[in-house]
Amino acid sequence: MTEFPYLRLGINIDHVATIRNARGGGHPDPIKAARAAQEAGADGITAHLREDRRHISDQDIDRLMAEIKLPLNLEMAATEEMLQIALRHKPHAVCIVPEKREELTTEGGLDVAAQHNHIAYYVDKLAAAGSRVSLFIDPDDVQLAVSQSLGAAVVELHTGCYCEAVLEGDEDRINRELDRLADAAARGMALGLEVHAGHGLTYDTVGPVAALPQVAELNIGHYLVGEAIFSGLVPAIKRMRALMDQARKEAAGIQIA
View 1 (cartoon, rainbow, N blue to C red):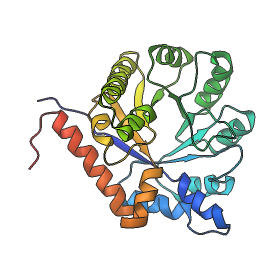
View 2: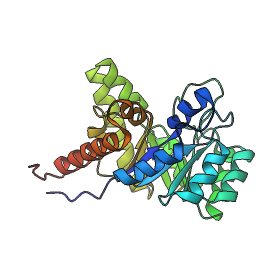
View 3: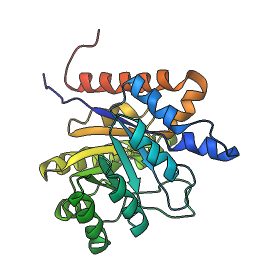
View 4: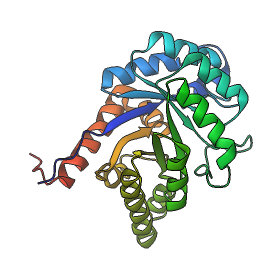
């Protein structure tokens, strides 16, 4: 029997803010969602402050830092504006992500190999300020090696391609994408990186990713905000937490009662 380390769950509250912003005003409140996530057993809160402020706002970040006890993982593009915001707040972690104005959501991993010199500046500044720096990348050996050379503490593996394959019902592609994630998780750990994963994970797709022993944290948001419409946010998060724990235990050979 293998003893797997505890798998942390970070809850992304961006799309609570998306619903709020659809009509303006203050409801629903993303900070209330963060409190609910804390009640449900989340280990951290993730929020992406985009250049266009389409969901999370500057005031949301101010309040999260002041009012929420859970660690904040601030997702941001590698821009000077976002760097200054991160340096002012000094969140527990900063995840540098790709960002395009026209995209509906993040469409893939950051190409740190092509942007090495540009990204290096932000990694150095953020790490010097005391934040754990994470790079959101595709599960690729080159991206992992460059992330390690840049001095990032963490990589977050983009799980979107795997989730798309599940949605399409393409078994061959599902297996290929899971193999890529498994290989990247093992490679990342071997390089001394802490490995996280996320993007598009659902109740149906979380198990095989949660079962990867090298993955220390999953970050999940949009799906849980959607499920909260039907079950409430706390029950939705608790169900996701239970599925993660079950997958972890089964992978470790622990009998489930």
